[in-house]
Length: 149
Length: 149
Image (cartoon, rainbow over all chains, first blue to last red; front, side):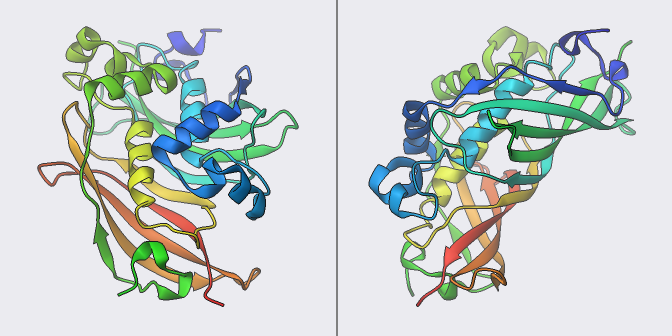
């Protein structure tokens, strides 16, 4: 099997599934990320978070998504040409300090670009799971990948 | 007019449009964000980025989205109850060091939650514009907001 990072577009097959190692969400980083990008009380203020519907500090959804991106780069090598967008992002369950998040990646659909024949487009299904195997986030990104020449 | 931050669900009207002040994307933060969350060559390696289809360093899409979230909190106050997800995210044009990004927010649709009558759900349309008024990113988030009691 060709490792995902060494693959061109042509080496991916619909239905394949991969999984990463876990990533620890520390309270310190949850808080500092949210202070910069999403300073709502349930992300940065312990007392307000405990009184909220979440019952304690939770990670910003953009922090969880950014960690997912980090884990996705495990599978992206020199053939990656970036992404035109994502669809159907769902924040399904809260992410709390101490959670261990890992990415499960499924290949949904592969197609050659009709306008730019040097690349293909893959639609993936990404699920972020915690240490209890709860899916906390899911999303369908599109990724451009160079074709094998 | 009630300021957005002081609003409950009931105070929002479909079709309203708001805009934020600009946010400067520095090369230093583009690079450090990407080193942590999206270390692909076109985000972190000047020479590789210049040789890529992007012609130079560009911001991670998750960085641009996180800055959008920061700007969205300009409009979210105590009634915000978080987001179940987003749809139709499109990274339309590259974001480069020195770009000044601002958020244009349009209220697409407001509806009362059928299962939880203490809150409503608003679907917004968010556009991120640069200093040339190019739309570099757009997305449709859902936000839960507490109702006026």
